[in-house]
Every structure is written in structure tokens, then in C-alpha cells.
Length: 356
Length: 170
Image (cartoon, rainbow over all chains, first blue to last red; front, side, top):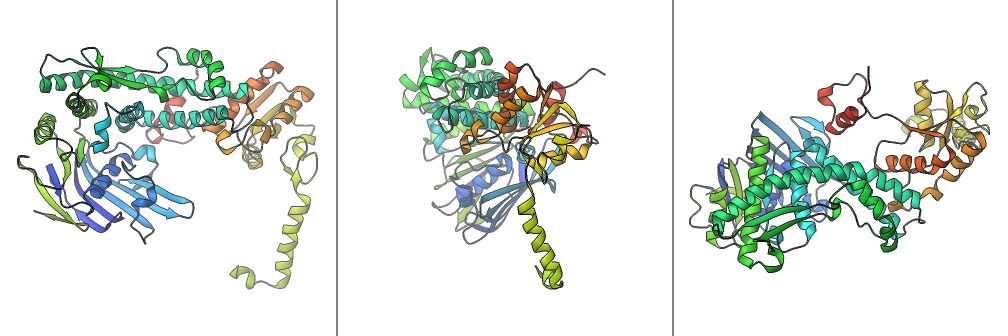
């Protein structure tokens, strides 16, 4: 798929932008704080409806204005699609609304109409960082692939939040209520675990193949899903009731899952070199792209934010080379790299985008 | 407001009286906690209604929604909200104890839990079903399904998935 036209109004530092991306690789070049990442963020929001970097959504609305808009026309396998995301400042915070082909839709029906694989510097911690990063990696891809997954996830997180508040002592302790939350969690938890397991199975094969191509066949990368619990969810929740009450926190459920990365059977996070860890991150990202493309029959759009400065030129080139047959990619950089091949280069200065 | 300014003084007095009367006369039924002028309310005191069924709702306005259907002739119980520990609302902030007492006093055969199909509505329903299990009363939940006159193609995937799970034999 590819974006053919993007319009911004009062989004971050853009008062108004009319941007016609090229197919293939688009490079945004310019000094920092001019609007490169803001534009990339807007493109991502057309697919995910959420910012990959804002702490508060009010940041997305240009200061002094009340309403930000991101509009896009995309060509997908099924034809043309028009997407629009509007963020409005209200006394009670911000409110977002979504449109597909001019009709208003809820978030779950907007999400994943266009699909993106984003790669930001924080992703470089995917292997060495905590399990929350790896869960959000899985969630980010799966939510775009399946609205049912997204809704199960949202429900699951809401119920876990209520259950934790109960265990923390926000209200009087109540064993029946704890058991009621466990009853409510079984269905979405089981569905999330099944979806993650199937996704990781596909991801593991793709990641290992790419990693092997880069580091040689001597090293074998294993990617395995470590579900919590590994077994019947209802039974595991029931078995954990006493310890959850004692520890006053939730101990069982896919909000405590992990993705394990092993090279030749040893943990990459604990024992891998930085080079091995980075290569594994790149391989995971390429694999995410491959799985999304295989599942939907449509190549997702690649968004690479400031990744070149973090990677040596060889790895960055290897990454782009490994992304087979991408239709469209966007990359931000402060300095134009030498050997990116055919690319449309856009210079971004003070929220103005000009083709070089 | 502009409309009121253009009306005679008597209209403004009538409106003011009506608001005062609302505050003075309208209260909660001491049995089911629905909004009423008489206590017990007309649904609780109407002998033609089925006393063996209690429909549990979150808010008083939900009683009106169900009454409009004319599909239900039992009694009600208004909880006054849904359980939400994140907002500091536990069973003791709601009229849960009162429901349990009514079940033992009135011995209904069925409790229909008609809370919203969201995280809190579902948790509250599951909680009540656990709490009332020892009493032996049959606790039921409103069905999930497709809107009448709806189009399968337009139903969101989760509603459709739940409707498939809740399918029944023709």
C-alpha cells in the first residue's frame, strides 16, 4: 500500500501542509526540531490512530489552536481509501474522531485500514529492554492486523486495571469480586494468548531467516513466545488467587507475557553483544513487515524515524535491502546518506516540505 | 434563555414551581431505588406485575429504557452505578446489600442483570451472579447480539463474534 496524498492542519508545528509522497523511498532531511518526526508521526496516526511519541495528545494540536487534522488518501490492495483523524481540544482533555471514506467511524474500525511498520530509536531496546516493550511490539502489529484483537486487548487492559485497583486496596477487599474479575478475564486473555502465539510462530521463522542471512548460519536465533500462563487461563487464575491477595498485585495473565530471544540457546538480552542485539532488533522489524505483508497480501508502509544516526551505514543499508519489495517507506535523517539508491528527498525546514 | 425572556411572567413562575416540586416530590423508591413520587413506587406496588422476577439495572434511567419495551413485567432493582475500583466504587458504594436482602425476603425465581455490555457492566453482572449463587436464584444476563434491522456487513467484528458465540437453534 502507499500514501498518495497527505494533508495536515494545525498538527504539531504544521499550520497547513499539502504533501504528495512518492512511491518507494521518501527521505525527510533537515536539522532537528523542524518537523521531520512530526510528519512521520502524522503518517503513522493515519494507520494506528495513536501517536508513537506523544505523552499527551494535546501536544498534537498546534499551540494556540483547538483542532488538529490529518487527512490522507492511500492506495491499498482493495483500491483507494480516504482516511481522516481529527484531534480536538476540550475542557476535559482531547477528543479524537475518525473518518473512513468520508464516513465517521469508531477507533476500532479506523485502526489498520492502512498499516505501518514503525522503527524509532526506542525500538533499539526491543531486545535488551524490559518485557513491556516486547508486548507493545506484539500489540502494535496485531492491533493493526485484527480489530478483534484490538478490542480484546482494550477490554483485557481495562479489566486488569480494575482488578489491580481492587488488589491494591482502592476499595474494601472482596474475594467474590476478585473471582468475578478472573471470570471476566478468561475469554479475552485466552484470545490474546492464542493470537500472540500464532503471530510469534510466523514471526520466529521470518526473524531467524533474516538474522541468519546477516550473521551467517553459525548463529541460530530463536524467537519464542513465553505466555503467561502457559496453559489453561481459568485454572492458572484460580491457582493464583491466594498469592495475588497476599502480594496485592496481579500475577497471572498476558499482561505479563514475554517474547524470548535466544542465540544458540542462550539469552540474547543477558549474554548477547550489542551488535547481536541490534541485528536481532532489525531482523524482528523486517520480520514484522514480512508477516504483515503475508497475512494481508498488501505491503505495509515503513516509517523509520531517525534510525540512521543510531545505526552504522552498513546496518541501515542492510535493513532497507532486506525489506523485500516495499511499496513505500519514509525515513527521517539530519544528514543525507550517500548510498540509499533511488529515493525522493524532501527537505523540511520550519514546517515547510520541499522536494529536493 | 431568550425563549424564556419572551414569555409572560406566569410561565417563568410555573417553570420555577415545577423545578421546586421536582426536588420536593421526586425521590427514590425505598424498595427498588427507582425514581418515584410515591413510596413504594408504582412498579413495586402493582400487584399485577410479576413479583418473581427482578431486573437489576445500573441507573434509574435504565428502568425507563426497559419499561419502554413493554417486554418485561417484573420488578426492578437500581444499583446506583457499576463496580469500578479504579474510581473507588466497590459493592458497598452500591445497593448490592439491599439486593441480597430483597432476594432472601422476596424469594424471586429469576434475577435478570441488565447492565451495559462493557468491562464494568460485565464485572458487576459476574459479581452479582457469584454473590447470589448460594441463594439458589437463577441469575440471567441480557443477550449480546446484532441490532434489529441491522446489516451483518456493518456490525463491528466483536459484536458479530459475540453474536456467533450466543447463537441458538432455530
